[in-house]
Image 1 (cartoon, rainbow, N blue to C red):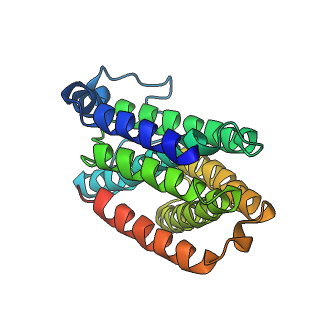
Image 2: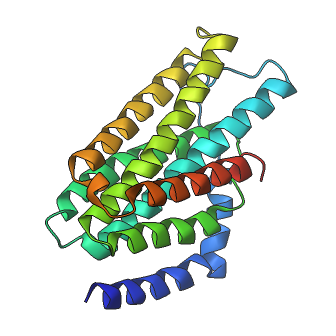
Length: 224
């Protein structure tokens, strides 16, 4: 039954992702009017020069891509396990990821930052990763969550260190956002461990494979 549902939804999702209208929406969504907060910016200070702007653009492009991919992973998990006893737990974590993505959507739009051109690819691969690991059962879904959330948390930590070294007062608002989201990701990571992720046969092999993919996605999204 799970395999039949997965096949049906994956085919539908695939066709939706690669429809011309969907791709156009992904690329044009961030070209709307500039809406600044009362402080003149949301969480970013006005860039001092082109070098700082390039750094922040790359940083936030990756963060947006990561949250977008995480949303698609949870969507894939829900497609398979949504009606199981694990469904409400996955939905709870997914709801937090939706808020993260919404915030980065807002930051990118306000600061005229282009998202990665690979969003359609992360759409498909994220969904497939979430659904395929969920087909292994609750333990598979939780193992995927542990691997992905650990990677995202480590990435956020590296950004926090970099911003603290540069100027913590200047980036105070951005640091607040990243720290809050990092804490949420660590909570998801711990939730996965608490719900038997490590009991999956081949857990460490699967975890390492997923994390290699996450590192590759981070590297590519920062540049394209």
